[in-house]
Image (cartoon, rainbow, N blue to C red):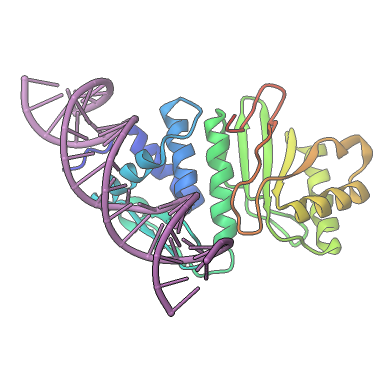
Length: 225
DNA sequence: GGGAACGGTCCTAGCAAGAC
DNA sequence: GTCTTGCTAGGACCGTTCCC
């Protein structure tokens, strides 16, 4: 019989939000809920996944387009159907799960952004919160058109002005980071520009590549050291 | 206190890249 | 084409720790 601990429940709650994650994200999320702020060993993460698979709460697959397993919470665990791993957005969703797990490890909570209420509203990939610090997180593996960035940045500026958003962070491929910063320079007013940052953190396959310090705020650091 | 979970180590399998 | 090497996933085992 598999015992479900409080940490297991919190992990399933997190998977209900991000829907799919790879082992790297599982490592960080387990470390977050362990309270260490560091990822657990790969072996440990696989052990955890296997245990919850035995309980019927997790499932995993290794699609041929990825070199690591993808894990998701089953319908039995969260009441949602299994994700389609062959959608074009899968790579993006796995990347979002990884950054969310890193934010959890840094002591943040993670939630989905609100649904857009109109054509001009933009839904971020996630919202990280720690105390009064509320950060909109975007993962950008492929650059958008300048027209789309203008629309998104208008919405970001509005939310920075009118809502309690502290910062907007883009985690991108090198190419996407360059374009996001370029378009942000154009479309975000200088008094707000410093509150949006775009960093190169992924390669084109969605693998985490950032080796240097990633500042969440003045006191946080999500790097692996 | 007993069973489950954890974590370290060793091992094999599968795959890709490079050398010959 | 074959072999070697390197890397990663993941299974098995076992002692330790944790939790109900």
